[in-house]
Length: 172
Ligand SMILES: C[S@@+](CC[C@H](N)C(=O)[O-])C[C@H]1O[C@@H](n2cnc3c(N)ncnc32)[C@H](O)[C@@H]1O
Image 1 (cartoon, rainbow, N blue to C red):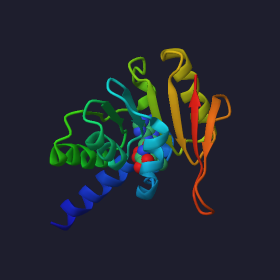
Image 2: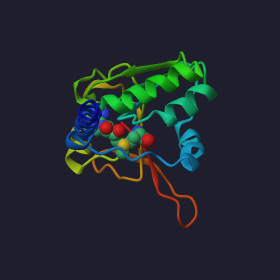
Image 3: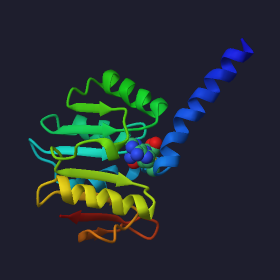
Image 4: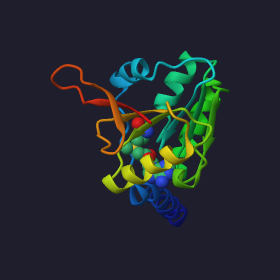
């Protein structure tokens, strides 16, 4: 019995480490900032919004419930987090969420017009912005929570109060 528990713990830790090695460990966006992201995203019917590295999918579920006519995609490399997001999608009945348990650098971005990203290394930011520029249409928006992306065109830097983290809106 102890062995089974140990093996499960090792498998979960291994699963979680994939995200940390690839780009960033799981640190969730603060729930109190969801409405700020919502305002910046200006979501409408037919938009394809993707959270690249969606973690446990809390932001996706929040937005998907509010905008049933918008398509949401969550890409998450760490299977334990993917499973949690998948359970939430089923539990809340969010049929407008599509989930992928994959490395987002290996996904086709050409269908997406709004991106949410949190917590990349500088190198990953650069790789991601090149990929978006190459695969997405002009006018595609990128919301970056907390971090700046040097090689994208900044449209708005939103900061709330003294303790609020910046949220940056970019476009290509
Ligand atoms: C800082 S967390 C952000 C989680 C979520 N977006 C949020 O705001 O709450 C970054 C997430 O990206 C995932 N991740 C890292 N590299 C990835 C990759 N190459 N492909 C897909 N997901 C990745 C990590 O496992 C982690 O869950």
